[in-house]
Image 1 (cartoon, one colour):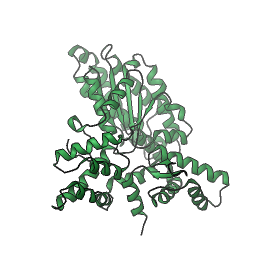
Image 2 (cartoon, one colour):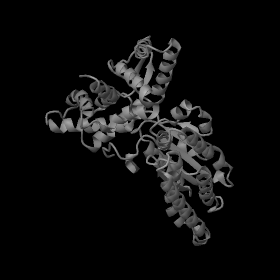
Image 3 (cartoon, one colour):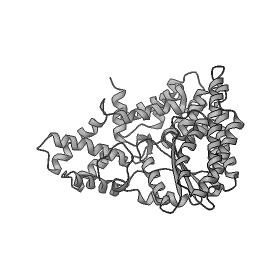
Image 4 (cartoon, one colour):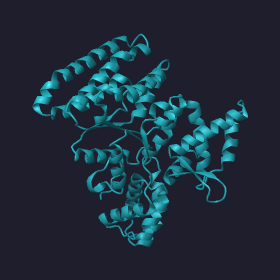
Length: 416
């Protein structure tokens, strides 16, 4: 196993989630999946593993990342581009039969795009693709896919759909919410009403909460047909096995005790953060020739955790802060950050009553009910999005960070 902390992994580097991959593949036989979670917990890696698995069972599988998309037409452009090479692999008779239709769809996409660009200077609303145009175009594109080969199963993996929907709302303040609802209604109802829709399964993922978006805008019903899944952290045994495998690969003298301490230092044993912690530990050991023994390596674990969160090494942690503004808007994001600042001051977390009191001080002109509602809403969002978890082991509930390096980064960022 290579020490990879960044790009999605595959092959021998895909470790510890074989069971979860098979479980997702089994679910996809009957349901579409919504897989949500923060960045860097392995969503892309496991989704690509699922794609490889179903391809081995003679499915077609395509992947589209829609984070850069700002409207419905851009989504269809991405889908069309991903389908083009797959359609080219079909048998000659099938390909010839659908070539004209596929080319016609491409022409229609370009035509609508030109019309939208021309109208964009007049109004933000006018810049959005006409509803009937993109819906009919999307239906025709998917119908082509569904009819390409009788009985052929397809998997469409859509990455970062929530970011695209937040883009639509942010860029069209007047009608963005309505357009998002129509897009999700189309995805839930119109697409499933197409003949042959059962041959297509959808795997949707995102690093920003789609569940938060729909709940805040009163459209939770639009995603209730998706099977909601997440990626839990590794168990301690699996995390230790991963660290020991890395240690063996790089000839680092970690024993079980040292590996256990490294896992405990990370706290939330997601593979990316274990890889990153191991990377910084390797750097410290390599820089000190007298730290070859396991006991000496253990002494370098805490300094390695601090190395992870220093300026220049902390780029991954900024997203945790930035996604709050994307999801919640300026005011609520500021409240959420204030609560996280409080929780970061102690590794054991903060008491909810203390955080509520802190929030009340930030909302002096609001009623007690409003203050409490705000706290409960933010508490649940931060728990659902894996910033913190409720720890009652001391006898008193405390909300503490899942990821210890994130807590240290948060504390460093907010300390003079």
